[in-house]
Image: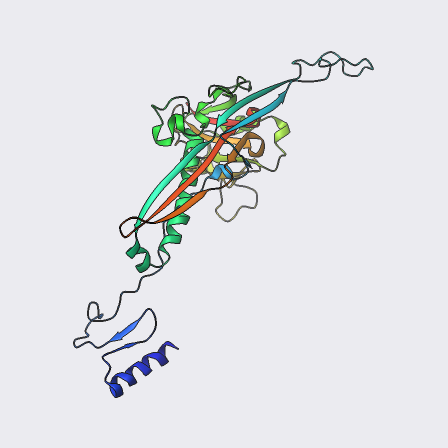
Length: 348
């Protein structure tokens, strides 16, 4: 069809004497006196390919985590704790109400819904000239929001804004760095609706930051209670630098890498460890002393993400002359839900 249009254009130019003939909506054939080389700047229009943005890594914590839609300005979490059966002998006809050790109770905590927002001014002329620009801006913005929330979930300190302001500080999400850690016992944090409540204690496995060992990984799995091992959502989240260390890990006498699954011939070393999938998570910290570089968890039990009812994206025309402004807003909260369902890998 394009060839036929061009020939018709040539015919009209020769017979009717037209100096410019429209071939299609996006291309023109113009008369030029010195068309040499590539023809740049000697006639014709510039072709704009569809706009695009470099791929961002969407929030990997959403892979397996519990995700719910929440209304209102805060999210409250309630956990049933304790035991109902007798601490001495549950196999009796005598009914002992709430006689466990510890007794039945609840633990609850409340977190405010946080907001991520952005405003983007775009010149109207640019939108009309560049193909697919507005759609690209919107889709990239959604991925940018996802990356921002992931970084905040991993490393933000919502108790103090002085050290993690770029991740939200006191206005951001509750990062994993906020939780107390223990090498022996996990526990729920204090109950209440203050921002200081719900700071649980999570089990941790330490490793030498520059040289993780096979035994460190074995010990991490051993810390995760066995009732979670068969859950389908158990997975490792590891910083890419830690994955690189594990890929190079060999026995004391050298030889093949330690983490190669049986039948793995496609170069996917460390795609799984101990049967659990490995998810690269660059929003965790690179291996260093005191930094969280990995998490092994039953994610549906371990982490809950509460999203607002909708992500708002609005377009305002002519907010300023010849400019269109996109305004986007997203509300959410996140919390460790079950502190027993995960283990943190922390550098020493």
